[in-house]
Length: 162
Image 1 (spheres, rainbow, N blue to C red):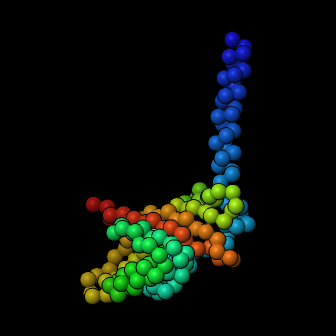
Image 2: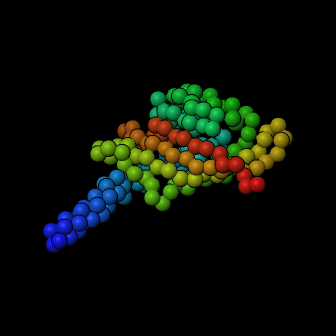
Image 3: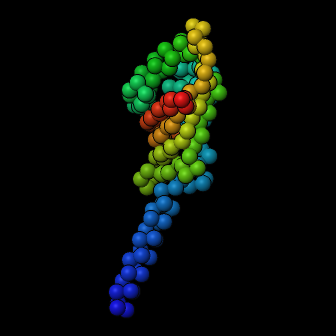
């Protein structure tokens, strides 16, 4: 009985310690977190309706997964946003990272993933009205030299409440 209790307690201690260690291991170094500004630069570019600046925050082989499907590569992302900005004027694009984000990927500290919410106001350029979109996103960032770039961003658009 005594041995069973010791084994049970040891198992419980390991079960509690391992997830706690894993959570600490994948959190971003607080010194690095402020450097990860790719999402802020993306929001700034969207608010300026600047397709070149939007594309510039992605890696050359970056992927942007939209509700309509994936867009592969910086040039295609630029073309996509050029078309979007011909139809809509976007403003007030605000990303809000999940308080538990970002997290590192691997051990080198050069790759980070993040999740969160976003919202953006829009005006249909053809006079179709205004509104607001919102949704959720996830992104993978990679360090290229001194800058962080988006390797992959996935976002959805949440329908307005009924």
